[in-house]
Structures are given as C-alpha cells and as structure tokens.
Length: 133
Ligand SMILES: [Cu+2]
Image 1 (cartoon, rainbow, N blue to C red):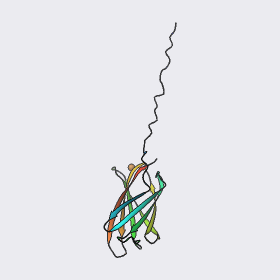
Image 2 (cartoon, protein in one colour; image 1 turned 180 degrees about the horizontal axis):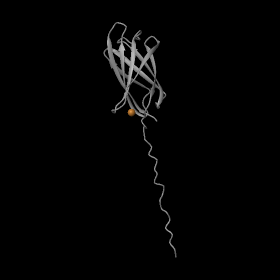
Image 3 (cartoon, rainbow, N blue to C red; image 1 turned 135 degrees about the vertical axis):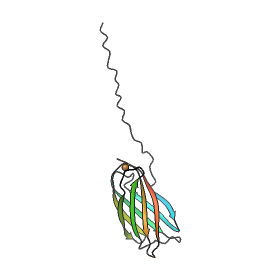
Image 4 (cartoon, rainbow, N blue to C red; image 1 turned 30 degrees about the vertical axis):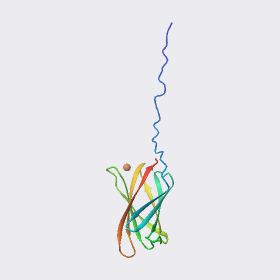
C-alpha cells in the first residue's frame, strides 16, 4: 500500500497584517507658548500620497491668530529620509492649510515653523502616526 504522504504543507504564507489599528483622533491639541494649535489631518487614517493638514491657531483668549506665516517640515523618525518642506496658506483668519506628499508608510513628525505677524517665531511639533501604505 503506497502511503502517498499528502503534502501537508498547509499554506504557511500567513499574510502579516501590519496592524496600525489605532485610529488616531482626528484632532489633537497642543500648546506652544500662549498659543493653542489644533491640527486636522485628512484623509483619516492618513495614507501614503497627498495628505492635507489644517491648523487652527488661537491665542490665549481664544481669538484666531491671523497673518502668520507657516512653514511645515515633515520627516520620519528613522534615519536616511530627507525632510519634506511645504508652506501653509491661510484659508481664513487663524486657519491654515498645507498639502504635502508622504512617501512612506509609518510615523511622521511634523514641525511647524511659525512666524507671527508681530515678528515672534516659534515651532510647534506633532506627529502623524500610522500612515498606511
Ligand atoms: Cu521612511
């Protein structure tokens, strides 16, 4: 009796699902100096490709901070990546928007270089975590 051993090679190609399963809140708040930054990232969850970042800046009294110049520097946390620079335009007083191209899945760091209309300069940092491929 020929016991033909069945190729018991059950499919071992497990598809490893890189689980970025933490849905980021669409809005995060941070404070720098006496200003409040609120950022929104679209799409949600963010994907490789074009990503729109909208920033609302308010002063200590909650009034929109208009007339600022924002330059965004976006980079990944690992070495060997060149940072991406974009400018933001002011959609309405205190509300700024920038569209940028994210080239890789993973976690990105954003530094917003802010020049206020009164000449003050400050930086605001936040993360875009779990960018999907
Ligand atoms: Cu990278």
